Length: 335
Image 1 (tube, helix red, strand yellow):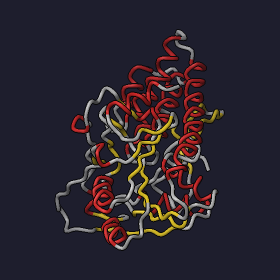
Image 2 (cartoon, helix red, strand yellow):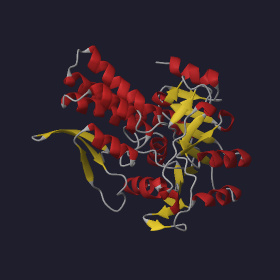
Image 3 (cartoon, one colour):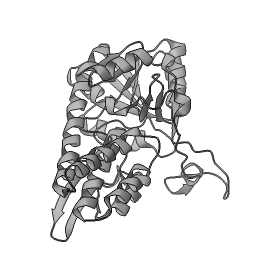
């Protein structure tokens, strides 16, 4: 399963994406023949997930360069398409820096994008290797949103650890929050889990508390869109309540994210810019009205979990535990 790939067609180059807004009902590829197409796909969440957005941003720069478009303007549009995930702007910078250092060679921009894609795939495998030791035998794991191959390189981030545990015979069940309002859990994570043969069940976000109360959760494992210098974690909205529940019930709460998601320029969680999404996503559900016409809505795409609620931060370079400014900085110093 590929979520994003580059093609050279007679009509010109394009970035192809598996349109995640159509899953699981339809597996449809969408061709982004220019940067405005790709920016629109990013904004409507046809392509999403922090590490994958970084890859998309890099390929977007390569696309602009290959088309001989204004690379600086294209890079700015890509980097600003979504504000919270640090990987998007970082991926854009990676490919743009290589392009400019080469004197404007489009082939170098494309090679940089492919290099980043390979790096993220290697990071996925490393995170799975580091994280599997945190999964107890016959674990019942709760996850939120989507953190698999649809969101990152390789098998993903948090879901890569889950898949490794499943293959090792250590996973009893994967509990999947539906992840309102856009249902990335029920639509995407359940889709990936089903393809991999992982025993799983989908639950309404509001049902998670009853699972904790009954002792049905041994581990919570989630991804991240940005990790601040102090260890605060921005992830899909609904993550913070899970961290509070896990803390109250004494259940480990583990974040799995590549070091490319760590942003030392953002000192604390309070400094993370939270993307506000359209009200329509809340007041409707799969296209059907879910509230009276004209109802206003509060629709942050992410929330922030403070480091004191995070048991461990797993990256491709190792694990920070406890999670704080010192342990996060130490991770980035490792090779």
